[in-house]
Image (spheres, rainbow, N blue to C red):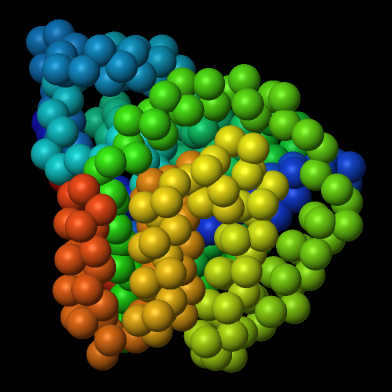
Length: 315
């Protein structure tokens, strides 16, 4: 019997939500990419008692054990982590990794969607995290309905010669964390999105973003993503400095564009910012963005491929 497993899950970045109107019976619908780096890597071992340094992890272990009718105990150790609450999907990766590992070690059967729904992941607003965990790639989900996990409606395998440069400026993080403390209140009191605006976003997805990806026209694909992301910024403007969360992100996005990025977007509330590049341009762009972030007060900048496979378990 296997006594420990490693679960490795991708991070992800948001492009935005298609429909915050909801009059067709579904709401949100999310676009985004799964990323190879950073990853959330969890070691889960059979133990005498449940143990983890983080109390939240113990709580999720308890929830999954009860659901799966599992009488074993586990020790959980985070081997690699994703920055928290900055638009990289750390929470969903953590929660599903725990459930995935416990299901395996208890020799039980449960789908990722079951594990997600049990812990309210992917069935409240965005299915991006769950689908990034399951599949990887460029992802579009169909929005939430009847408390079910948002279904995957499009998954693109991103070519190996494309790179994503990610910038995480440090200065705005405190402000973003304060904003996220009120996230549930904000989401529950959002103004209804104009139907015409949701229709525009939907048309942008269906008639530009998806077909451009299928044709390998990444210039057109990226133009669609940038337009989608910035258009949504106007909807969220009340809660941000402007179209983007802060001046730092706006500067980074402008620089990414000038460096030839196919797309330049803010992920979720920010301040994570990213651009999609041909690999031949990525080294120079990485160098320039790194210097810019230093001038803006410091932070992290890295280059990654898109993760086209999703999470995996190693026993």
